[in-house]
Length: 131
Image 1 (cartoon, rainbow, N blue to C red):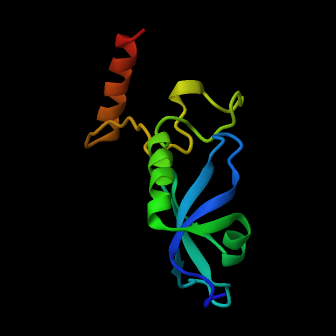
Image 2 (spheres, rainbow, N blue to C red; image 1 turned 90 degrees about the vertical axis):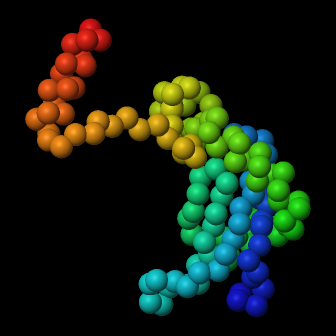
């Protein structure tokens, strides 16, 4: 498998059921961290980031494409990465427009302080204000 694989962009053989588009990814060979583990590939997706995959799975589901052909697919997926979550349309698990599950960027609200007591008092005051 080492001779067949090349670091490259790959396009899905099937269309994604949710987006109705073929998914694009960049696959790069990496050394396995587990002794005796099969060789792993680092998979980079424009909307959801990095994960690992075996060459066998990559070959079964994706075909290699050149950089020029990958660019419009990559840009479209990257742009969609902030517009919709990974839930299926109409899923009960999805909270709607505010759902961040699987989005490229996620909203996080945090309080900055030096003590837990101070933070709790601030939170209680805020809660009273918005009742």
